[in-house]
Amino acid sequence: MRRLEDADGGFVDEGLHRDLGWHRTSAIVEWERAESTDDLIEVTEDEANQIIERFRARWGAGD
Image 1 (cartoon, helix red, strand yellow):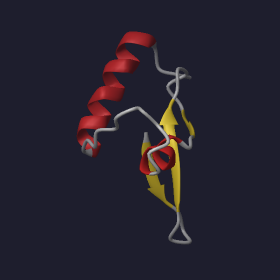
Image 2: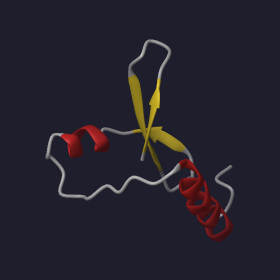
Image 3: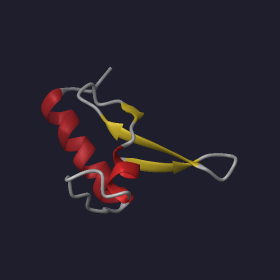
Image 4: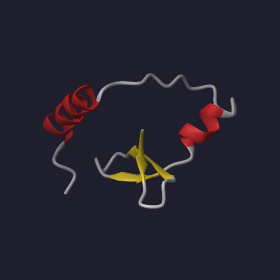
């Protein structure tokens, strides 16, 4: 998951899907509201990029 700030000062939450593309998700908001049992762990942008590259190497470029 990732949270991006938009031009209006709001945010857009996205999750990395099986096609290795980013798509909108409500998972972070649900987690913040304790509506999700999943644990989210914050990682740096560099760590996230390394994880995504491992996924792409294993399962394709997501084109």
